[in-house]
Length: 255
Image 1 (cartoon, rainbow, N blue to C red):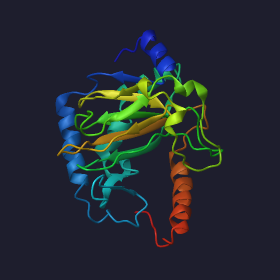
Image 2: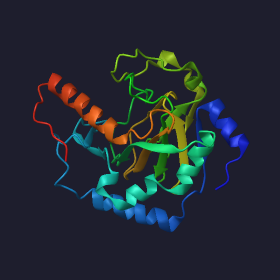
Image 3: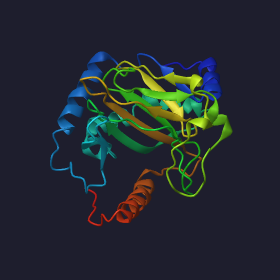
Image 4: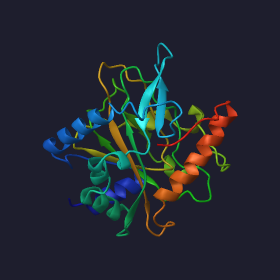
């Protein structure tokens, strides 16, 4: 997969990039079947399991399972996608020839009714968090406005982190951006989208009757603290345990 200098320049200017038809239809059909298999892992889906993410239904408020984070240790196929040479080559071009290291991996199912995420940046103000962090979206289902595709806001990454560097997750007020600069990442299976950790983004509820499944694969440049995935998840789980404990939930675990 050839990446032109014009595409790299566009990514640097906009803070995101869409590349079409990276994976073949038969490859994505296999990934979809694997995602369906993982959704049956009732042995893992538990509100105390730190691997699991939950979203309320945007109308009823019902709390439902939404994502596995991490996922590659559950599935050799998801691991292969995360380390696929086509993704790593693309990121190497964006990193000016430097190797990309997997930092974080999620499979978000976004079932019908899932609320979505408010405006935020992915960067967290931890000393260990790499500022070269980028996320690659791999759509398993078509992503569009009806099912709550990700919306990114062009150019704001150049302003850096827009919240306090206090180690907490922060939503951004709408006053932080001009909503007219938003670009909805309408994607088909086989496409990729890439955006940096300083790029503000959000997603609306899934108002369709089908899933909007996506792999969210995040990476850092090798020179930016190196291989961090294992260390990150240890730190992340410690942070999550503390957050849950603030709400009286002390029996969390990871499996």
